Length: 252
Image: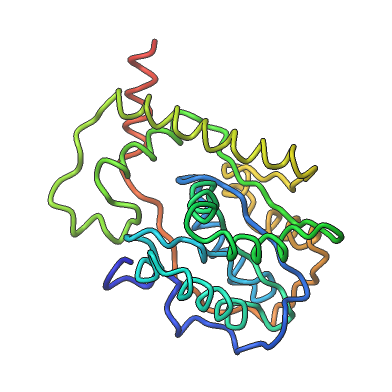
């Protein structure tokens, strides 16, 4: 968990506790460095679409790393999140990466079954939003740079000792890793017969209000201007664009 930075997981950003199951539950299915944190906070700010963050991220450095290796604590956290991160109109959202679900297959299959039964019921609506980036080179460059530096948010940049050196090999490796993760989603969509709402980061960045309206319509949610809430700001990181331009130039 990042320290000294408001990430959005802090209790002060919770909605009022809400008993029972959400009326509408949906998943933001994506991979790292798609602008998903920016989009999640944009949607959360409406106060009507839940607060779709990484509630199944139990990696040691993740937001709930303190629950790593403890299936019981992970289940407690999940049930707590359902109560305090469901917006007052009954909508709950969650952002997922394939690796997070795959980790639960190995470490906490009962929790995964509980989560999937709510998000992807056998008999009921399966509300899945898929977010991707159109610019594959920029995506891979951003992922490579963050992986090498350990810097995943703009607020961390000022604390970093030095920026990482450019690495063509790291970008190529990042492209391969991202392709594997994207294929994992596509395989899941095919296996479960899911037709997700597909969003593209570049389009969402160019037209954020239209993107919010499109997602709300997909979920069947009416946005209420009076429900808007305060959430942490998300700033774009620096350096990735230069790496992408150099990679393209070297590729001719």
